[in-house]
Length: 385
Ligand code: CAA
Image (cartoon, rainbow, N blue to C red):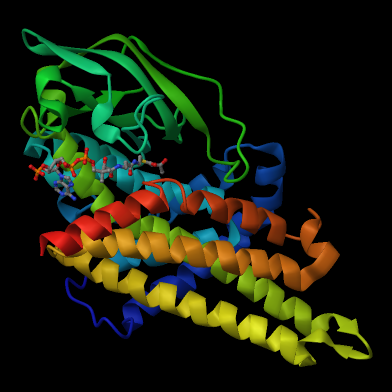
């Protein structure tokens, strides 16, 4: 992997990766995207295609049987998958989200065991931070982990857990010292098969319907103490550091959705004839397309700039991760909404993919921290410096 990359131009290797993922996504993932959405079913075809080609978690270092790809490569994979199916793009995105706490803060043993298992396709990873009463205020969580000899016993409920039930492995943030708020939270790896782990019914969502979102219940789940990620009390910081990196992947998802919508709408306006000519010949349509492409390119540049900082773990990643996620998701919502508009009545029907893309775009403004939370994060960074 190239540890450094030119901010203003992607390398030939990155563009080769993009071409490869685009072909794979168009052949093996796109054909099922409408059905996956309509039936709200898990995109198993996408999982198979990504795993067969070792694209499901390319961020895992080579030392743990992974590809050791850089942050920009992960962005490109997510972008290209999201361009055809946003639900499927959550496979590589959430595999990174769930495993980053281990990668950033885990012991060598935990890394070898769990990053290795992820790379070897033994199971997917999810991330369990949010709770019914602790969404934006993540440190207000109630899930408890109590030490009992060489074990911890977990009790509580996590909500909005992406790919819950499908994933084999979960990073779970839980309170080990209720007196200390964020400094009393610790992170653990919990396995789906651990006794006392169960799942709620899938949420009925507006978009990303192919990616199951469920509650996860912990009922006296007894896990070995060495499943703790890092030291006791460091779980919240690990969770926030993880989000610094993975907000870049949500920006990538937003880019991909927006690119898919722009590409489709661009093709459509050149075919669609009204008043005796293709509607692409009308300046009103051209101005819309130009604005969409301009916003998309600005979003892409800030996202790649954030990916470069993620790769180097720069101190200003916290700002850039939040800025990229916020900017790209707002752009994706605008671009997909305009794409529906360009198709007129057709855009509003399920016979065309634009309404799905518009519904899928909406979540990128909400998860991994609402765009209001991103502004809190950015402002704190600004005022700190
Ligand atoms: N890096 C390292 N450490 C950090 C950090 C960061 N970026 N941010 C916070 N910390 C640590 C620090 O140690 C800090 O203590 P100090 O101030 O002493 O340094 C400690 O955490 C507490 O931080 P804050 O005081 O900033 O905590 P807060 O309670 O005010 O919360 C917040 C800040 C930004 C609002 C945070 O709660 C937040 O990000 N909320 C949104 C949560 C979120 O993004 N949830 C998404 C869930 S995952 C998801 O959506 C996945 C999916 O489905 C795909």
